[in-house]
Image (tube, rainbow, N blue to C red; front, top):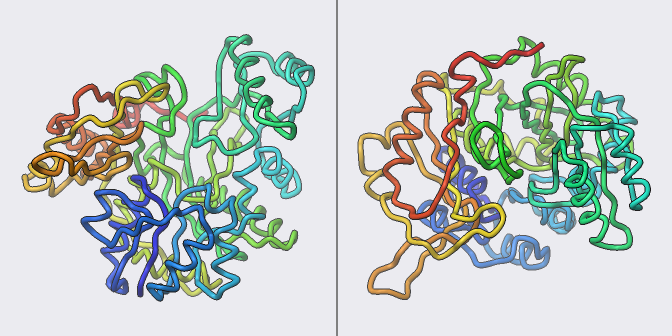
Length: 432
């Protein structure tokens, strides 16, 4: 099988790495990819959000499956163009991708499917925004209705900050909207559900860390780390989420004539009043994917092709490695506000050649290869730059391996959280 992966981040690097372990995969092409994927596959400098360019690439390489990583190509209809041309594709069409492209639309679908979620107001004016903030009170949860690269949500006790973020969302255009929600207490969890338009196959649970600093302090980011599995999760949680959330949503999307084929990412809060959906995404989440796929033993390409073909009912039960996985993100100085790029990164080759490589691998997110000097130099090119992924017999061991590896990477000015999976490893997370 020839597989084309669209995207350039650590999520796509994780997908490529997992695909290389699938014996049915003969070749992998990545567009546009990064220096990490270049070591495992063929990178092609094609814009993943350009439907015509992606179709030409898929046809030129005669690929058997296209896997769309980021949200922008999905919302932009790349999957629709591929399917219309007869190219097998894993990822929802533009109409189904509105589940992520519009928070308001997702709330509408959840209401129709009777999915438990936070109460919300959709606002299109300053007056509505002010009324919604006052009706819920602090903590304020303010969400940009559209795509915001994982940074469109503000949760704050400061009404002025909430108002400022809401107004910034409304200022994006005449049709701009902002969603104000009630605050959901309790620990959070992420569940990826593979969907074939009719059926749902869940992967294992993960938890990510959105705030930039230890102790969940500072602004939201695209994600500073993740771990899997969730040893503290209530028994039967995955089955319950499939039955009460994922399957009803897939059924509702089919009823609307927009069948959902791809990953339905279900962000959950395990509140004192029961499990509630925080949000939907329509693709693999980053950085949870890095931890979840590190533990998946089932052949990934076979699984994704079955979903694309509407054959998930024929797939064997998923197999998982027994270890725990912890992912720590190394971010550039100044991230998330104003990341500094062009900083040299060293130590990755030594890490890959050492004994620690038995437990650790490093995935590229925001890197490029600078060839302007005497020798090529890996440098930073974005905010989240590397994902360090470690396996261990439990979370304590996985954390130890991950942070030992982080300490061996020379990336001046970078920062990372030191508490990824810490509370879980200590058994401190409780569900009320």
